[in-house]
Amino acid sequence: MFGLTTGLAIFLILCIALACVFEFINGFHDTANAVATVIYTNSMKPTVAVIYSGVLNFIGVILGGIAVAMGIVNLLPMDVLVDNNPYHGIAMILALLISAIVWNFGTWFLGIPSSSSHTMIGSILGIGMAFYFLPGNLGTSAVNWDKAKDTGLALLLSPLLGFAAAILVMFIFKRIVKNEIIYKEPIPGKTPPIWIRSLLWLTCGLVSFFHGQNDGQKGVGLIMLILIAIIPGQFAVDSTIDLQKINGNIAKIEMLMFKADSTVLSAKEKKMYADVFKYATHYRNEVGTFASASQIEVMKRFSLRKDLVKITKGTEKLMAGGNLALSANELKALSHEVKASKKLIEYAPTWVILMISVCLGLGTMVGWKRIVKTVGEKIGKQHMSYAQGASAEIVASIGIGLASWKGLPVSTTHMLSSGIAGTMVAKKGLKNLQKKTVKTIVLAWVLTLPVTMILSGSLFLLFRAIL
Image (tube, helix red, strand yellow):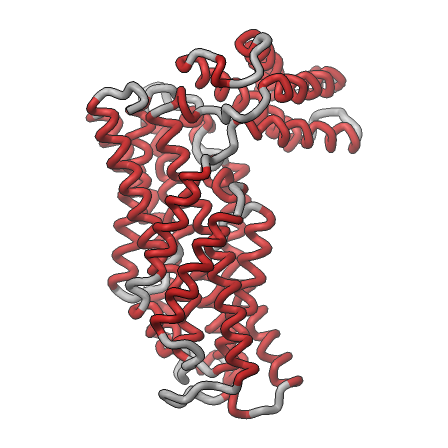
């Protein structure tokens, strides 16, 4: 298998299996939020709803691209992204997956809506922080704080926006629709009016599709981390990309960087500035006249990945620093060339996307009952009405769709659970919330990051010591 030793082959199979388990659990944990409204309001039979949601999750992953997947990968320390020791990568991946699976499964078992996105981010940050305790102390390179801030902001704002937006949508509903039936608790066995049922079908489908686009990509990112860590020669770069075209992109980056006044840069920035040219030269020498990575020795392909990571990350950090004395048009052109260069290293084979699609889709079809009951009955003192279900789903589908478009990981659980809470408040104020359930959910959200960070960081240091 790709010339692997028996030990590495076993670790490869184990890591891929754990990634599939994580995505399977993600399916029945997170997607229960999507089907909760249609099941609880009698708009769809449970079996039909979970199959419907599972299929749309599958399609969402297939059509979702890899922007979110790469956002997850880029949270990791740069040293991990350019480390060609497979056992270091295995230690990282095992720690990340085990901690994420333990927390996700535990919260599902207790029927607590908890974010798989939050869990994964915490696990990744824990690994990054653990780098501070390794010999040689990698210092500030241990966490990609710029990307972490963007991701953290998205996760922080999603429940707040979901809560506020759901109140607004409920207000609009009440002003436009005067049919009192849709504001009352569903009658067991009785289906709602066809128009509200159709709206619930549509919004459930959209939430499922966008969940696949967003959360499914996280699984794709995990598989790519595994392949790059254990089989770097085969998966470090995309062999379908023209190396000479990337060479042209890098040459333009160099040309634009030459225009900048390096004397105004800080000492750290000057090193990054010099590294851009250093790794650009190395890439050019390694590639020569070759057009495809398949023409380059397997052992040298990872060095091309390292070159691209150093060039693109260094350039992005210099641009973010604000000290590059370039015009707005030049900065825009530089950003364009960086994005074009990344095509060589930011990719996923079709089989990886299909595998994650299947795992997420199958996971959606089992284990949904615990979360559905919490969402439908335990957030508010009154059971969820048709209008409340539709409002929460509208908000969640729009929020997750926008996040996927921007390449940001966002929590389906946060968006929908906070949306349900918002609709309860819109109906009868804060007194309409079940404090015990809300406290439990909030506590889970608050604890997710620190618990997964400590667990993954500890496991990472343990595995690095023994592997």
